[in-house]
Length: 549
Image 1 (cartoon, rainbow, N blue to C red):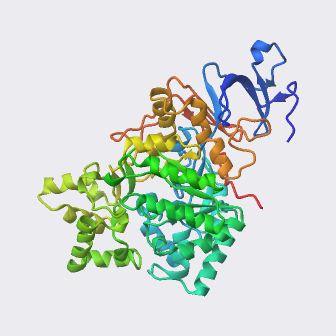
Image 2: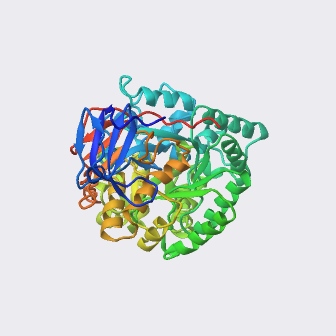
Image 3: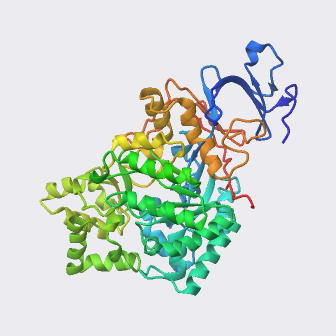
């Protein structure tokens, strides 16, 4: 659209902001005018130049504040939270204006009645059981329509883009069986992926350490990725190992995506567990080689060392075949439970990335059954020692008593790897934020101010301009959004104002639901959703659907 003449009256003008525009270029001082939900005028160095300044019905003095595009969370687990919580300050207070959901191959569309119930139980640790949500949808398009309707037709707290979950698609067609699909089953999965893309999904995710997605071999995944590529989307795998076989797993995904001709976005691209300490340069060299050869690759990370998942995710894949009810049956049988224990503690379960579990690194962060709350905030090893039991006895009790809904923190990361990966030119920010549990990972409430406060201001790992580009312009380009992710005339007014001297996460591992400081204003579609540090009642979020190609 054409910008309006600076002499026209806008809805809002943000005066004397230090604009960091999302391109990675130098910051500049400017007045920025907003009208009709878009940026309509940017007048640089307006006060010093003595030129005509934009006029508006409302003015905001931004002296001392940075104005940037709204942050894009490339890896979010707010699939039900957006329908459960109109406030959603966990993300809005960080400056997040768009979340990418449908991650790790498991979410709530497309489904039928059977698949929906299995998925609800499988990812209760991520989103709760969801029995408080009236699930009226079955297709991807119907789910996106439900998000657009939001609360009484007023919308949702933040914008949302959706990835088709490959594991859910497989469950819908094949159940939770560990086998290769028939030709007709593969064709049906391809049709479901095509329909989801046509209905507005931006790509496809996989969870290749989660069942049933992990049962898919490369040939199956390649065919699905070809469908995604034809529709202009990207593939976002949680690959087969972040531990003993991590580099091989990354190499597998790069080769698969190149074979399919599909853009690749590596989810929470970390290198964890003892075998990977200091190995980030090897991963980055692998990516640089593929990029130099013409591959289209990006990745996201969160700026913390511990990971977060469900306790059930650590189980070996054979123990999870058939779905949640079959897991429960196997855990109840003494001989089978002993086989599971050996795979976890001695062999190294594929669910635990091929590394024998170290129970002293597995901290219980949330339970769905109140009677198990005593375990929250303690490692499995510590709880076992306190009770005079083996760690496996405690873990098994939690898995059965909590109906697989237990969430955990895994303290298995390495700071040098975190810093090296976030510097890479294809890096973007993703919280991987799980909002469930009594003590969730603080990344759910703190990822974006953690980047700006700790890794920019305190440590200087990234410059402010570089970091903002990682959190805004670069993810918008991956999502192929033609009018988001930059402070530019004609672009949507999804904007954040923060104080670079004070911005910091409030969330800690002891108090993970504490909101950040130093982010006084957040706008979506030109409307204040955070104003003077407080949440307004505005619900400006809508789905962001893949543009037709």
